[in-house]
Image (tube, rainbow, N blue to C red):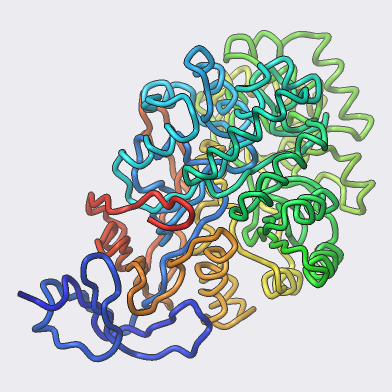
Length: 579
């Protein structure tokens, strides 16, 4: 009987702990790393040749929305194609537990709007064999998984489950409701939830409910929020993901005594393309908070953000009340509203006043007030990428201002007339805003930065940010030389594992679970964005694969070889950070 199930032979080891690289073999037995050193190939059932390749810990993706997708895609692609071996779901306060049976459709409608997950896919693909949060974790435990999964307790479903939808959106909790919510949250933590997540976007939040109203958490009372933080303090375990202000992040860290993962640290814009606060100021404030004993990490955006979308399902103009109303409803309802003269007048007026929406959230007026340039992903930057009607092919590759001039129309009319003539099938694109390399180096090398914000599983027809590990390693580390590979792998694996309370993953060392990526550093690259009709009910999404990954290994089993899925599903549910 062989000593090892698998031996990875002759690779350059980068262990995720910032120790110097070295060449060695890795022996795997029963899903764990049994030995690192010089190992005979005679001692292995399977030998993977890693000569000339990097052998590193699998990546840990802290910001995903695979809550539904994992039920039909065990490998959580896009992430699974890019070396990710562990994901955290339930971000931004959104999720599907606890949810009563008669509210399941409403919960799916919510996610179809705020995270743009295809509704038809959720209806066909989800198991819905739970109501409570502990039952949801048990469901995750049962299903096949190609990655390891850790789950937040989203506060949005918890508020609605306890208070009812209208009350959760209109008032603070009563004393009895708050007590009940805290009890349910504590039960969720004891069952294995990793903490709570919350979006605090206020009345003007861009990620809104299916009816256009803010999410329940967007305007929740501070006392309700801090009550959950006190539960974390009581239990003494878990952390918080917050999309909100740094002031609120500091309050939660102080009351809970637990780590906070703050969204979002970026050189220029967030994952929706909105202008962010100066990164130097955010880094300084977080460093000062940590010096005071408030443990705060920052999720860092390390990719250029550009959108591709059609108006049949676009929702990320939602900070504009006029555009929000026009883009609510199904395709036929949108078509009717986009042709309405009164709505057209309101849209033109908003644009002419310099208050038009930014793709992803915010307005041109807000960008200018914050010191950014005009038209950052605004309507005037949109390019016609693809049209369905042969008669409209002449517009492909043109910017909207060019089309408006050709047609002698207002830009709003040119935009909507083209979309309507193509039955809303026209694909518009925003050019990615170039990231200043020096600013990226400052962000990525700051003491608190954890690369990520993949939004994996969300906005599936608009963005492909799940490719971030490949872009980080190839563009910024290899080509941009902003840090060495040892630090890069620490930030992609061990550091996020530490922040999330994952106790035995994120690094390569003996007796650790064998979550490993083997890749060709010099030839690592992202492939072009493409459409894939691979979701339930025939829904399509935008995907982006990579080249250069030779093997992705989860708990000792190869899940991808040269980007081909093996079909293995060795992933584990990580309750309390452990399988």
